[in-house]
Image (cartoon, rainbow, N blue to C red; front, side, top):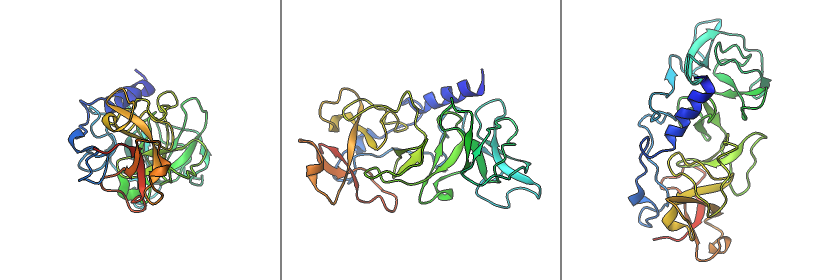
Length: 266
């Protein structure tokens, strides 16, 4: 089984309820002030509840001094997803954000320490040097996301889902407490408002939409469906009746306190 197949299998595990629990009783209750409440791993590392495919950190990607002189900290594949962080010979000459050639097995991709060359589409020949991470604290105000193609954890920039400004290859995607410029699965993250999505992992919606408990979305057939986001300061007129503009996050990250979603509160 090749690395891409392993990564996709691990990612599929992230999308089923057996891998991660969503406390549905807390969804949509006005007393909680939010319509989403997704339980995450204790240390905040994406992919920890993935059946053994989670990241391994033998060096800290956010630490400039993580490796001895002449080496760099990067993510490599050791027979599985590209999410084992190790010190390897430092060949870093590229500027963060530069195009690069992925080197899953060796890490010799030309990116500087703490960065890794990742494709935003598996069909692309070239990738981009992106900052790697252990958790959100390494990426503030963005978030630490796992590539859906390699499970490599990388820093995704924060974005505004109402006026998104992500670079090419990225799209504004919902997380548990913010929106970030993430990689989307081109054959999966396509659902429009009212269409099904998966609340575990918050996957399935097209860019700039929110995935919510289906009981809150008019006409939703399924456990969860996509809906439009809205600005809590701009009123219910942003939403099609009977939906109202109400808080999306139970505990929003700084800067996302006014991000809401269109749904029918309990």
